[in-house]
Image 1 (cartoon, one colour):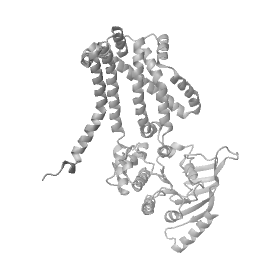
Image 2 (cartoon, one colour):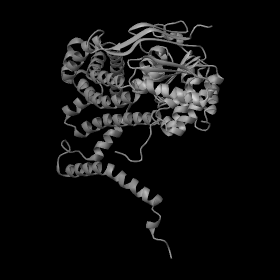
Image 3 (tube, one colour):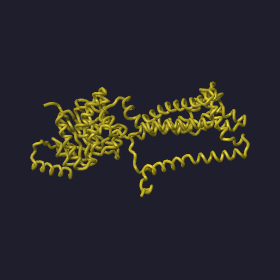
Image 4 (spheres, chains in turn cyan, yellow):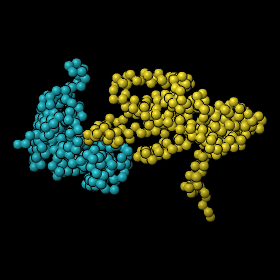
Length: 250
Length: 269
């Protein structure tokens, strides 16, 4: 069995002065491994520390204690070595307002010094895949919320990174648009053989997306860890839903 | 039967609106010029010269190379001073944003500089420097440096943290981070800073040249004062006004190209 691509061992993160009564513990001795090619849904209530875990895996923040490794390396200390290997889809679209949709998708490729012609054709291909043909030269303000989120997904996929981190990317969209984009996202992840960590606070979303669901308690630690497959029968999914609801209520 | 004009308000309505707007802008200048011209009929030329005389002097300045060279020298001093202050100010602002200690150290010093009058810097420059150009450059830099530094600092601090995190997630090199994120994000504030400082610099340069130069608009103004030549004084002043108007128009043109990405609301403030 291959080693996990993402590993968190006894990871804690607190904000404020360590040991002080005002220190806020966001993550508490978390052990979590994500296998290569797995689509993990990380589920928890608002404020349970999901985004802190996300930021530690992304290398944007450092754990207070414990170790985080991604592909055998420390993502915070060896930040630059993950260039092109990890892509993020954020909660908001976070498009640069001074760039067109095409230029926004090209952003990650620019960081990788991909030649202009190649990065343009790659960006155009991804915009086409996500149904944005004809909007390549539109600025973000001229696009709808759903279209902007599609651009941000295209931006993440364009770099062909092996690991995708998604922080509630569809939570701000209406139900119909969110469902369509979720289905497209899962299809693209599976077709392209990516490893994805998908953070959500929606049980439905977790059941639709994940081939494994980890439910977090507060401060972030694993409450339950549930494997899923695309062939999991509906009745079994309902049982899982009840299990998740119980865990979240506790 | 012909339709009444009110039934087709489109083009004629817009042109009337543009005409009204143009008149609103021009009218105050026309009134001031008219009052001046009337005053010139009742007062001696050394107090209120005729506008015809003033425009003749303006024409002379623009068509005589020796006089135009004075205008260009002043323009060069303004631009050099602003460029120097901007480069130093931007560098200081980056250092201040990167280090709290540097920020704590420099902020009071720059605030202190802001409180020193332009004329005091002129006196210091005359005492400290020998040549004319270093003196004027020093005065221009010292009087505009604090404003540039604080404006760039404020722009850097106001950058969206979300967008910064997004760009950082792609692990950019420092140069690329500046090119794709920091410069486009702070450019609107930088252009505003240039617009504000341009007006300040054009006022300060006259003071600097008045006291410590042997050429330039300030020096020429001093000559006109000694000759009691009001038409000349006005004509030389107008050269600076023209320069500020042209420079502002260039900055506005740059803004219209660089910020075309901005959404325009149909309902304005």
